[in-house]
Image 1 (cartoon, rainbow, N blue to C red):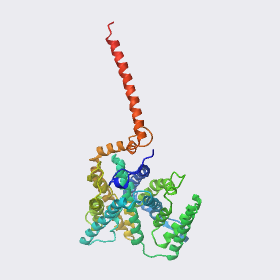
Image 2: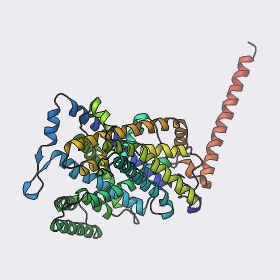
Image 3: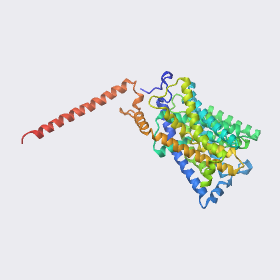
Image 4: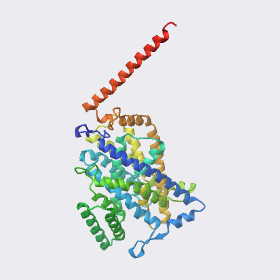
Length: 467
């Protein structure tokens, strides 16, 4: 008998997920965790390379131009990483968002309200913190959006490094936060970091997207059709003046993420399964490699805490994210009378909110866009993103370690499958067949113990018998 999802009446905040949702999230986060570790390695390599005696080679590679100039695509390696490779990342983000909207946590408006409001507050408060610091410190307001992003891969890498496995409800909450976060980051990039628009190129990109959508609706298959078309759409979007990653999001949102009769998974989920390793394992780490390399010294670290722009980024990530997400969650739960899962506590929510202060990938991208043309300030902002993300990671690690035994017990309970039918036992509590199987298992064990008791008694009698 298949497991069923909780009914709307018994749904709690951070309550049990349906079995299909739990499996999807586990698979998605497993890939993101591996990608996060690669991202962490790439960031360390970039920092070492950019501060080594041969650091000039880093900037030489970073600024090396390649691509067809006739098509307006003679770009530096760093530019290709930011505009080209991150389009793959945002393509996956678009599929994730579409799936969440039609089949995941965001499909039910009542259930979606809490994580959506938490994510919005988790972006608004960091922006407010940054703005206040720079208003009172007479700094630049251009970087207000830098501390608004959450890097799910980096956050999961931190969990992997400290050896903490979160219960599925907390992992789902973190993933939903990141998905909504990505949506608003996309809107911020599209609205606030688009200046001059080439309407001819933009019209061509929209025409290409229309063809892409039509081919999907006609069930045309074959990567050799879609990949060249996607490259054309991306090139036109780049030349239009709109950030090229928007093309990736748009194509991801067009994929069907609901299953039809006879399908084990939707086309969107199938393509996401194929593309996610490329995004998490190649695109994002390469972006980090060519964007995270900034000069680090005692003086540079001190400057992060003394200049309003960089201090605003650090406080936005460390304080703004934690306060925004936790405050938005608590207030929403308070006014909607949602009850917290009895297995968890509000400090668990605060720990996850602190973990969301790791804003690496998209924060670096927005930092580059916000201060384009000012290389020195861009590097300072990147350094502040690294410092802020590191502080948030340390704080979250401490908070999560305090509850690690509770999490481990919950994870073991979630994964327990005593009847070995492939379905965790907690999903079969209302299944009579499960209880009959367990009764049979216990009866077999009882019979084994009775036989062992008989043999042990016979052996003792033999030993006590006079020679």
